Picture (cartoon, rainbow, N blue to C red):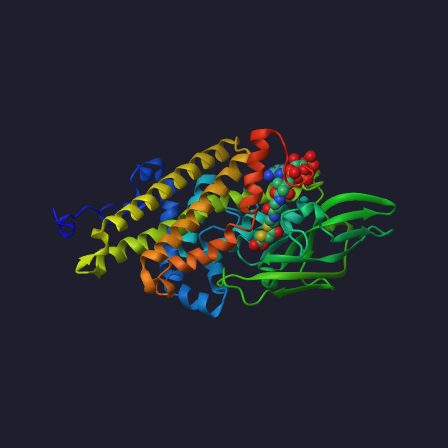
Length: 416
Ligand code: TGC
């Protein structure tokens, strides 16, 4: 048999309800209910209609397309896994599938949905007062109010316990916050910021707490970080807080928000979404190079007919299948209420690592054409540099797993 007379692959078009297409070598499609598939395919339609035709332009011009927000809200994707207060109450698996479809379009758009739903809305939903929930969640689910989540600081990234931002309670009850946050998604377009700060009451240090800060509060300033080579269709910002005065009830009051477990509970949600999201970017990179290799002749033979190409495609397909199976295992556990944060680290570390390797390999297989925005893999690979770094770097997740395996914390040289 010659390489060109073997119609070995189907493009999945015969099954209009195929979620995964040709990469599905292990029966992934059969693992999802009709309702889960419906949701995923409706997000795919949104991506096909609104994101794919424009993403190269947005990426090149470094534009976050605000006009996409009403479309995301219309599908119920903002805070989609939260219950009540205008949120869609979808399952963890549905949330994961939506993240995957969005990130097949671009990590920047999935990041917007994560920051809004998994970080800002989830902080209010988990830790907020009834008044805070009613004030913000319905508007945020409708896309009428945008949120951001300020944890990381210029000198405190992997170690948020080292944050310097300080909220001091005044004798009348008001809080005054001073400090700086960095790498905060959406801050320049946000209406509300969840700001995590060390707290001090008169004569008393009280540890890290969260505050619901309207971004029009006096002394709040956000500036977009320029010249990014990654996440160009998204916006990451510095926040400066100079004597920002807030009423006593701006604090997130729940006991669950006392100390760093407050923000970490929200990071769990965002990290979970990333496990699925990055597989979307990997799948899109694979689909791009599979198509290209079928049509591109080299020495008179389609690239797809070369053994080296097929071995690379096979390796990519293995990791995409394994990555989705891992995401699904964790998603079913999350829906059952049994998902452990260490398992989230397993998923985040593995799937980010494999997704960026797949996107880079796909770029290489596209040859010189792969360095333009005509093809998605290098854009995905550049975005994934951010995704593997935020919400816990690869090193942090490796050390969380290492601590679980050995019982010894190795985050610092002192063995903490
Ligand atoms: P440690 O200080 O000992 O623990 C503090 C408390 O937190 C609890 N905890 C968790 N709770 C729930 N889920 C988790 N995943 C948790 N991890 C820790 C812990 O049990 C303890 O509770 P308590 O009751 O005893 O006070 O911290 P640790 O030693 O457990 O963790 C160390 C380390 C390095 C793993 C942690 O600091 C870490 O995860 N660092 C990475 C931080 C990170 O991911 N930063 C990214 C922030 S994202 C952002 O700011 C902007 S990106 C989003 C955007 O685009 O805007």
